[in-house]
Amino acid sequence: MTRDEIREQVEQVFQDVFQDDDVRLRDDMTANDVEGWDSLMHVNLIIALEKRLAIKFAAAEISRLTEPGQNVGNLLDLVMRKRSQRA
Amino acid sequence: MNVASLEWVLGLLVVSAAFFLLKDVRQRQVCFAVLSFLFLVTQALNIPAWTLLVVFLATGFTAGNALARRPSTALLTCYLGALVMTFVIIKKYSFLDGILPPRVLQHQVVLVGLSYMLFRQIHFVVDAQQGQIEKVSLWTYLNYQLNLFGLQAGPIQRYQDFAESWQELTPVLVGREAILRAYLRLFWGVIKVLGLAAACWWGYTKVLSAYLTASEGWQVSAEFLLILYLFPAYLYFNFSGYCDIVIAGASLVGLRMPENFSDPFLSRNIAELWTRWHRTLGLWIRDYLFTPLFKTFAERWPRASKPLSFVAYLVAFTLAGIWHGSTWNFLVFGLLNGLGVVAAKVWEAYLLKKRGRAGLRQYLHSPRIALAARVATIHYFCLTLIFWSNDVAASIGILKRLPDALVH
Image 1: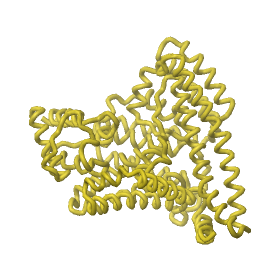
Image 2: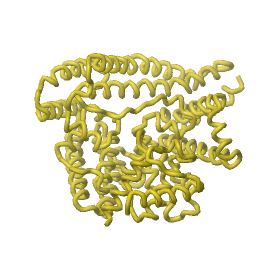
Image 3: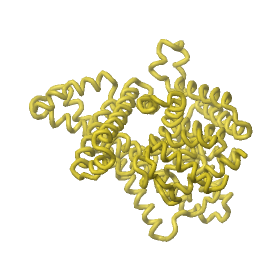
């Protein structure tokens, strides 16, 4: 899967989880840019991504994504890495 | 030896000045390891405690190493189960009375910092199993667990973060001003622990005995308020002062330690408070208790995920409460904090439903509401801390006089 294909899939997951079809992902987006992206929704997002993309996140990875400076770009990179490990 | 003692601070100043005369990273690591060991020796461990420590470290490293090479959920589960069971026996938890034979709980093992070592150990083996530790090294692991700056009471650092600065172990303070700031923080920490915390504790113990015996009229209200504020103030100055000393001390020898406090009394709910007060514990609870628990619930029963998140909060915070101490009052403390988090989440969900996203945003931006939320959060947290400093019966005794205090 290319990065754009991953982005498309992840964007659909965001739209489902946050129940908002207008969500458009940019690499520099953070949790502050998406309405309702709190710690609980973060876990819901992780569960939905794992299901949709058939990957598994580690506890440390889930946590790291919430650290200051982390953004959607980092999430996409992580998903890409996990998908390539799986292949 | 206490980290706020004169000998510790003077020793630190001398050692940190001499430390970087050592040119080689390996020399500095050996020097640091020797200092950590000497610090451990000052903690007056008896033979059973030394034995426990050796077994704890040997099994932790072996399990982490084995899990990193060949992940196994069965091995991880067995190891964590044995680890936690050993911990509750060593700590002589109250609920074990009547379950285990009395002689099992009559042991003399007292190991300083064991609670913190336990959380570091759980993190280490879980992350090793999940492929999050690239290189498991015995030398790094031993220094991670026995690091003199985190031995007594944290902060709970991640292995990966420790390993990163350990491998370099070079000055992290660049320039005279940064070094002076570290010295200033060190001495401010000492003042907090020896001055402010000690004064709050002295006041608290004096007022507590007066409050429980013969006070009447407006004195009940005044004494209740002093009890309510003085113990949290003592705890804050004591623990944040300790953290100032160890974080500044670590930075003087080239180690980065995570921050543990970030203006906790500005939190607008209990969930936020645990990301500001003892935040390395709050984050540990989130990462290794709440998230896995909630994830399991939500994957199994997706339709009931919202109410089950409340169960996960309650379980996680109750377990974290129990971790603080072996008596029942700590369970109540944890449970009350869990309830505080659930209340915050329920309130937010209610506002969202009633006002919509835009209304919630408006609510959150209101300075008056922010002030009210902060005041309510501080007072609720202070109330829960009554169960920290007293056993359950004594805490209820204090709270029973609350109506009298409110009337006056």
